[in-house]
Length: 139
Length: 301
Image: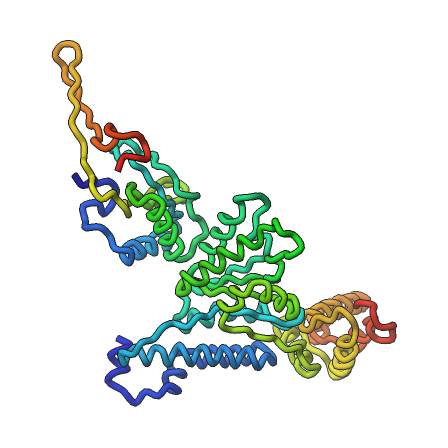
């Protein structure tokens, strides 16, 4: 099951040229980009691991793409995303985030039903990959 | 669109392209604003020509690989290495070789860390900042310290080499330093020497060139020499050149700054309000008060 998180996730995988164009857009608006990765793609897992510091003062997309490729080489079977943050007063938060790498196979999520008092049923989802193996060995 | 117009007019000669691309104007501006430096200007002209011819070759479907433009500037102090590097970034952007055309000027401190594992991130950070533009490493020979085998400079050099090879399209590295020290640097880092295609030597300025530089500097600051001051300054340049610690254009700039100080003091001593003319004219006495005249050689001023 293909995970759809962040911008562009319903589109086919972005090519490097398309990623570069998106990075150029972000840099043009003065946003700082960061590379993040995880192997726990639960939708409520908002804090992914940082791959190095957010990149301030970078002027060209090639630098960010180089870091993305470094991350891909280190974690080929992880989810990797690019996060752009806007430091403008009043915004000061993430304004764009999109996935640039995903594992070859994504087993998806199962629905977990929990019986509560009074025949109440509580639902949650659980990733097959995450429950099967520990962190770092999931994909 | 560029391509379409060029293919319908096959008569476009390289020369006309040279003029229409704005490169000619840029080179003319370089000529006007930088005195002397013939080998440097020649090399910039060659690079510009190659990049234009490459564009023509692409239009004909011929193989065209962007040339490696990493450079090394060697020369004595004050011969304009940093100034030219600043210009080079702009020139390369106009020629379409680098995308952003900014210059990141660094020295050893910005590249080399202080403990194990500090150097690589530091160097990479600088490289990332310079991408799309020019990375200018001043006093590059300091990167390599043969006397300390545990020096982290070597690590920084290795990362640089890797980027210079793999990201050739993304950034241009310019090393600068004094001639003899750079030679030792290259002989102990052969990998670096072979990855740098352009070794440009900055010659010392002649007395006449130094005078023109002085005039240019004064012109920018809205000052001028009167006739007496001009001959006095020509004498000053001649004397100063033979003294130790002479740093070409930098010495000229320092001398002019001191002359301006003396000019200001002289005007201060006047009782009347100085006119516009007096405010911009430097006189012979301002120049002649320098210690260079009539003092034994070796004393700076």
